[in-house]
Amino acid sequence: MRARILLFLLVISATVSAQQIFEDENTSIKKGNVLVSTTFSINHKESENEALLLQTLDNSYRLDWAVTLRSGYFIKDQFAVGAFFKYANQLDEISYTNDIGKVNDNRLERSYSIAPFIRNYLPLGSGRFCLFNETNLEFTYGSSVKQISNPDDVSRTVGDSYQLKLGIQPGIAGFITKGVSFEVGTALLGLSSTYTTSVIDGDTANKGYTYSNDVNFKIDLLSLFLGITFYFPVK
Amino acid sequence: MKISRILLVGSLLFLVSCISEDHFGKSNRGEIKSFLIPGQSGSSVINNDSLTVVVTMPESTTDFMLTPSQISLSNFATIQPGVGIAQDFSNPVDYRVTAEDGSVFVYTVSVQRGGAQPQLDNSSFEDWYVETVLGTALDQPGVDKNTTIWGTANRGLALGGADGNSTKQAKGDSSYIKLESVAAPALVRIAAATVFTGKFTESFPSVSNPRSNITLGTPFPGKPLSFSFSYTYQPGASNEDANGQPLAYGDQCDIYLLLENRDGAQVKRVGTAWFRSGNNVASWTRETVPIKYGPLAAADPWFGYAQPQPGEVWGDGTETVTHITVLATSSYEGDFFKGAIGSTLSFDNIVLGY
Image (cartoon, rainbow over all chains, first blue to last red; front, top):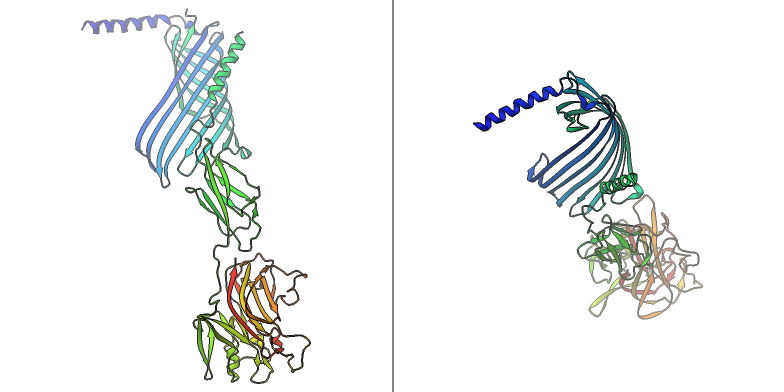
């Protein structure tokens, strides 16, 4: 009972102090501040004898993870410039049995991106919540290997991809306390240009390539991102 | 200093992002999937358990210095010697296949000729049946009239009231055929004896054009390199023309083999072998005659008389053989009623060599 009262008092006091933080204005997004954020995502799945629509998998293993480091500098109030670096790793391994025997289908893709960005903040009310919009120019290099081995042979596709993307990411930042905000955003994909090459079974003489361009402004809800951002110095 | 550190970190990150092509393991497969030599017959037989490849070349192949034009392997495997390198396949040749992981598979590639090596049915004239024509019982080579591939002119003689001149003869426990040019029973002077693969006409035979009475050739799939036979020959004493006038030269026997392609509208001569001799050969003698494929050269000894017959043209020798004609006659100009009465050819044991 004593613990419950203590917890209640802590919550009340935190709420009161948060209200007091933004009584004047949000000082975290002032000129001269630095923002730093990191996001990490992971997607893991393992299965055995998993029944899919067309095939029952003997085994499957998936491990996708990505880490993003972002840093920016407020060159004026509510306006920051900076860059982020993103590293992503996708591993899929499945095995199943068909007419000719056991098939192992494995795929690994790694990519890294670097993107300069500008970010505008628009405080709402006292500034506890801010709308923001980030515009970035992202360059991504990726390489992948897909290998399928069955009793008959081993087939391998090696790919490289290069992508240049002009991205617009609007979102909302909620300040938990001074210098720390929780962000939710989405990607409004603007313009991207992608060049991929692929070599099948080592046949470099017949290297394949694709070149694609996309222009659209649809909201990609699947790329909704969450993150925590720190602002320095804390004033 | 800071810039160099950033570059160093950047380089490491770049290396991390690159993936080794064999990230999921190198292939240990080193199989031969296909093996092709230009001109081969059918498909190569590849056994990836016993590591053997057998390629079948046409029967006519004599040069075994052959160059594989296509070898398909498991992915990432390599082979030595490679495609386009000529090898002497007189004996099996080893091909070394190396898988991506370094595993080595040594295949033995051998080349054989032909596949089926057919012989002529009743080529030793052991089987005979009796055909009765106008009350005359004639011995004819073969098991029965419907299945035999051999024909003679015996029935023509029997229709003229004479006995056949192609007869069954015993030689120990076996038999052979004796061909004897005889005086014709009517109208013409001489009836040369002949035995051939084909049919003698079922209608009343033409006396003026003996060749029109026979249909030469029997279905045959092989491409032999030679044909051999046993024979004796005694040319008749007096070689005369159709009017009984002596000729300046002696009578000769003719034994020849023709291979034809009759698939298309035009009959093509694929291969030719011809033996013509007027020598007196009293004891059984074995003769082997090479088969020449394609057109004969002018320098060829058979060139003068082995040309395509009416309705037949030269092929280039690479055609598939569909029919074979083997013909033996006691008087080589018997078609023109020339010859020596009494010329006798004994003929036996035909073997096609591959």
